[in-house]
Amino acid sequence: MKLSNYSSSTLRWSMSLWLPMAIACLLILSNGCASSQPPPTKSLLAAQIAIDNAERDRISEYAAAELTQARDLLNRANLAVTQKNMLSAERFAQQSQVTTQLAVSRAELAKAQVINTEMTKSIAQLDQEIQRNEREYP
Image (cartoon, rainbow, N blue to C red; front, side, top):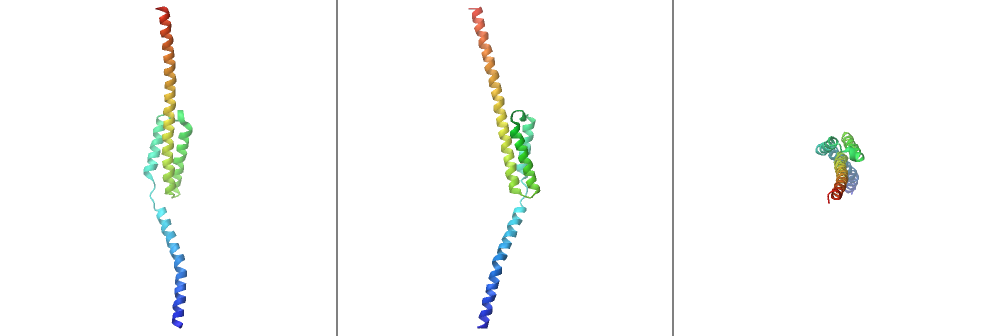
């Protein structure tokens, strides 16, 4: 009888330690996996190149707010890398690249609208010239 009591208490003791130890091991492993992720260098580089190209193309003349937001997102991505939060870094880098693309699209739209306005004015001037010529030379 004494042996079975000893085995039962030993079993309860080992079971009461097993669960917390298993949880601790899982937490250690999950933290190790999260911190061992490599930095999202491709996304960071793509975002930086997109911003550099937009600056070279003078996109800020037409979409300054969006380009500023893209730079801010890239800075946040770089900060997340230094804090070893690679998932956030990846997300911020991708958001930066998409925001830069939005800035480029808005700038292209603004440029197209300017060209459209200029062409409309030119057509109106040509139309006036044609009407004046028709009056002078019937």
